[in-house]
Length: 506
Image 1: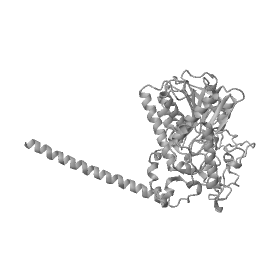
Image 2: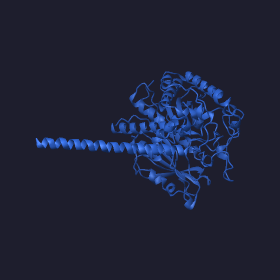
Image 3: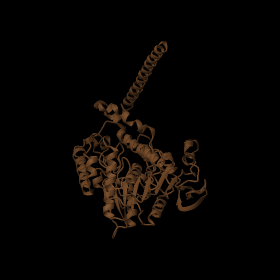
């Protein structure tokens, strides 16, 4: 009896102790959250005021409607969204915002509707004659279909019909990203794949190209297609600066925006509030966009791990990936560890762009940039082909590709007939899909197209505080001097047009 009484007393003591610990932990969590919210409010106190393009979002199709829509219905809804932006943002624009640097001012040289072509919209490029295949192109977060227009042109020139869809909440106003859900992007991806299969016809090769967030959507779709026979399977994936992992802050972006439920603190819903000077990409960036990016990339990583353990990745199509070793937008190491290291030996390939080893900035260059390549790679042999683009030698600007074939550790070298520009110390996340001749982002823009500004050709020297936009936006390299090699590697996947044996989905 005494033993039972002692046991009961000890149980009550343990329960009371557990409650006390839980109470202290709850208080600690609440205190931390309250502190973070206060810090967030203070940090945005001096942020610029919200403009109409931050508050007036056009209506987009819901997930359910996209899933049952066809291409024409999607384009009709897209047109309604652009019409709404004209009515709610451009037409009532305040006088102080009617400036040349504002893409939403109808008289601005940046106003998309006045340009050679408005690449904010979904488009289809048809080849001459009967298509030999189809490709779907998925752009990145805050971007537009413009970012993959050169890759689309290349596929079209090789006989493919190219379907480039504008993902929901893009191409219109950044306010549209405040409430968007990543599942809307997934639904749009499936719609585009249905349209590509319809246009090419059954039995033809079907490729899927994704840039940044679009690459994450491409992987997500391909993993779904492994388990859903109704989904048309891609024969090859091409990923450019893929968002397989994101920076840590994105995980908590939703919490940081909590104060925005009060109108007084609406600016806390935004990470960046910047002038909208780019006709085909948002400069302002809401926290919800970061949150959705995290949710999507986390889903991809989780499913890759689960299917790898279950040995269900054998039917995944070959992946061709292009990634800079320095990338401030996404996690480059995640591309290797969370994706490529889990792939079967299926002919996949990763192309890494190293830093420029001929540029000597001494202590001004972050030491981590010099070792980025070594920290990124896992020891060979690997189940995928690896190519590293860099200098022939530390004192040479001649560019070469050092390639290690799957299953081997020895590398062979291929001169590219290209040079690493002396004024470029590394590639960037945003640079890879654009040639030097790109009319908006290139260093030698094609004069045949007018997009109001040549962002890649501007060499900035002057006094700070003089420029109308952030210097950070203007100094990031926006073109890829090695773009011809990108097309060369894509061509290798077009050499054999035969579809895989698994291409039986609708």
